[in-house]
Amino acid sequence: MLSYQHIYHAGNFADVQKHAILVQLLKAMKLKNPKMTVIDTHAGRGVYNLESEEALKTMEFEHGGRHFFDHGTLPPGLKEIVAGMNPDGELKTWPGSAKIAREMLRPGDKLVCTELHPGEFGELQKTFDGVPNTELLKTDGFQALVDMVPPPERKGLVIIDPSYEMKTEYDLLAKQLYQAWKKWPHGTFMIWYPILEARGYQRMLTALRNSRVKDVMVSEIRLDGPPSATYRMSGTGVAIINPPWPEAALDQLTQYLANRMPIKAFGDVFWLDNMQIDPDTGTI
Ligand SMILES: C[S@@+](CC[C@H](N)C(=O)[O-])C[C@H]1O[C@@H](n2cnc3c(N)ncnc32)[C@H](O)[C@@H]1O
Image (cartoon, rainbow, N blue to C red; front, top):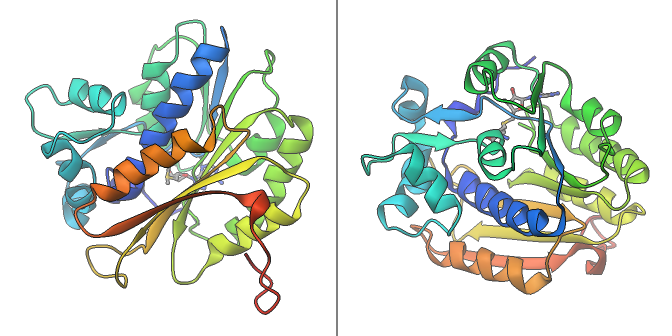
């Protein structure tokens, strides 16, 4: 069952965090690697029309992308990409992870996108029609995560941004990630997760913490206050395996974003390897 469509959530505060980190990752990785591949396992449609019926139904972008755009506070890199797509100064379009990656990659760098939803895949094809060095596959991203690594040059990034439509995806993700890491222990992997009261993300992080996967840096932005109609998530998290920069770089970006949210929010950056397992709950 695939009913999730990211257009309802595009440009929300989680997208701002996820996409700002993606930009910072790609900037650093390009400096280190003359050639690289980006694999986006849950690519979505690449570009999101914020004037669409779906986006306007939830208006989630209002308290995320639009707030940062209108205040001129989108972090450098993301700011220029978003501005380029909205030349008249009003936020009408939001770039997805695949679009951001392709915008930042060099012509010789490869982008591989997998997307399972037929409608989203059709839109993705329209977004990247004729774009060189860009491969689109209508296939399962969790399987691609294992099958497609390492890329031939052994340099690059895997973006894993599931919809978590089924609760089992948290466990599946941890399992597949471990298999992928065994094949490519020096690869960089970026995983987005929602911070929700059901705490599925904690199971995923705990499984990762208990596995042999090392060097996992985490950025979280938590909102002050209970979930509401405006903010249905309590926060947003991104875990990065083998990050290309020290903790301070991610901390600076996380605090910058948390401090500029429309409501009070707290930013936190930590190494997953240092987290203790709570004996009562069995999770971190
Ligand atoms: C959160 S959205 C991705 C948003 C996108 N990464 C971005 O930042 O613009 C998750 C996407 O995963 C797709 N999806 C769900 N299950 C999938 C699977 N097993 N394999 C590949 N794609 C899947 C959904 O159709 C949806 O487009």
